[in-house]
Image (tube, rainbow, N blue to C red; front, side, top):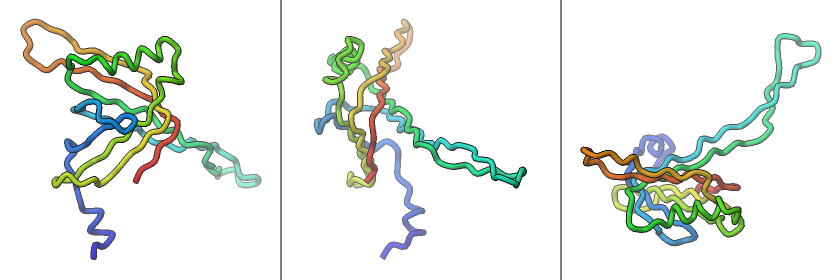
Length: 148
């Protein structure tokens, strides 16, 4: 039986993950930056106690997600972003799932982002004399997520 302390000590590599969009694996991403989660608070001053104020939660602010991959012949990520540029956000929304895998390829954590759409696309920096991989990135926002 695993104790809570043993579960805390399990560390996993960051390079084993799978990204799906609407249930389909669409690309092999080399990097993913998960959102920063922050609870916004409001200061409420205690009546009569001038040296203390309460910090009450107002809302949770979940940041954006950034995916990076090597440029391929497919321009599907740019096409997805272009839908938003054209104002077609309703058809550009997707469900994006990121699954982190252990060393045996078994899922250990699943992040599912609902009603996600891209807000930023970045192309590679092209430079003569360089032999590095051309990387494109896409950043998206979402309207809710689940972690399981």
